[in-house]
Image (cartoon, rainbow, N blue to C red):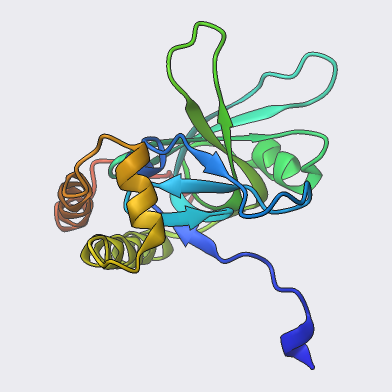
Length: 201
């Protein structure tokens, strides 16, 4: 039966403004193969994420082999995605795309503590990168706004263990993210302040 087949973790939607505030990762068992989750400040665990935005720049920062860094902007901030030899398809796609372009990324959140000790940086290790159109980007903004609001509304529920964990780990008022949702939706109404990809005639 299909129910017995292990399924992949759901790819969570989150705006950059929330994703970049997340810094705490955890496993739910002692098994070394157990999934690593990033704790979102609105009270959700994320082993995979789904983001859409404008690829504004890309750079091959590898020394001995290709290692691509992509800068992806949504209405609330910036995601950074890194793909190298262990993500060959994503790396090849990043190599070929000419910014600016709308892209959809599904991947794993990764945290990194820089040597200067200045906080924790969060990035995405892409499983897939694809070019999308403006309508897809707009739909992602609306659906991500809905998911974020759902998490905010459920934050104070006594049974919400991940919200309790977020409240303990992060000194961040959850209402902050309602403001980011409003800003994201308003950016659509204003016709978007992000750079528009050029369409060749």
